[in-house]
Length: 253
Ligand SMILES: Nc1ncnc2c1ncn2[C@@H]1O[C@H](COP(=O)(O)OP(=O)(O)OP(=O)(O)O)[C@@H](O)[C@H]1O
Image 1 (cartoon, rainbow, N blue to C red):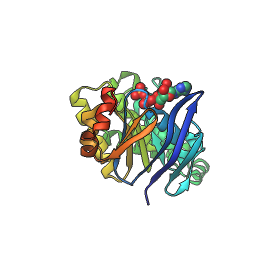
Image 2 (image 1 turned 45 degrees about the vertical axis):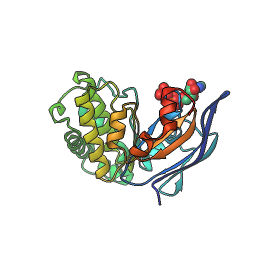
Image 3 (image 1 turned 120 degrees about the vertical axis):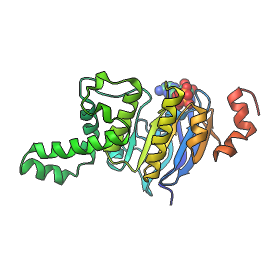
Image 4 (image 1 turned 135 degrees about the vertical axis):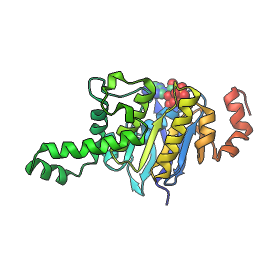
C-alpha cells in the first residue's frame, strides 16, 4: 500500500480551476516531485494535502487513513511535515530554539505530563534541545548550534526549516521549493540532504523549479498543467515526453 494516496482531488477559487481531478500515490521512502509551469496548481496541491486548503472534491489518505479536511496541526500529529516557499523562521529566537519548536509536536503527551509533574520542565527542555542539536548536525548546521536565527544566511535558514520539520518526526515531508534562491553548489548540497532524508525512510514530496535538481533526485515526478495531471513517471519518462516539453514551452503538444 502506498503511504500517500490522492484521489480525484479538486479545488476551485471562484471560477479558477486550480486543481482538477488529480490522482496519484506515493510509496514510502521515495523522493516524489511535483513540477509544472507557473500557475499549474503545484502550490495549491501542496496546500490541499497539508490541510491549508479544504478540497472541493476528492480524497487524501495517509497510511490508508482518510485525512482530507483535517487541519495542519492534526496532520502534523499524523506524521505530515512541511516547509514553506517563504521562510517561516522565528528570527527573535536562537537557531536551536526554532528546531525545538518542531520537536514539541512529537513529544508524547503523557511523557510531557510526567516530565512536568516529576523532576521539572527542564528535563523536557533538555531532551528537546539534545534532539534539536542532533538534527542541526544532521542537516549540516553544526556551525550554527549556538547562533541566533537572525545571524544565519538564507541557505542556512532553509536547512533550519528542514531540521524543524524533521523534529516533529514526520513520516512524510513536503518541501516547497527547497532550492529556491540557491547557487549550484548549495543546490547540490540540498540534493544530498533530500536523498539522505529519503534513504532514512522518510518520504519526501517536493515542488521545485530547478529542473536539474528534480531530474537528479526524483524517484517519480508528477507533471501538472492547468491544474490537471499531464503525466507521471521517472525522470527519463518525463524528460522525453513531448507533451511536457510543449507545456513548458507554452505551445500545444
Ligand atoms: N488563493 C487563491 N485565490 C484565487 N486563485 C488562486 C489562489 N491560489 C491559486 N490561485 C490560482 O490557481 C492557479 C494555480 O495556482 P498555484 O499557485 O497553485 O500554481 P503553481 O503551479 O504553484 O504556480 P507557481 O509555479 O507560479 O508557484 C493559478 O491560476 C492561480 O492564479
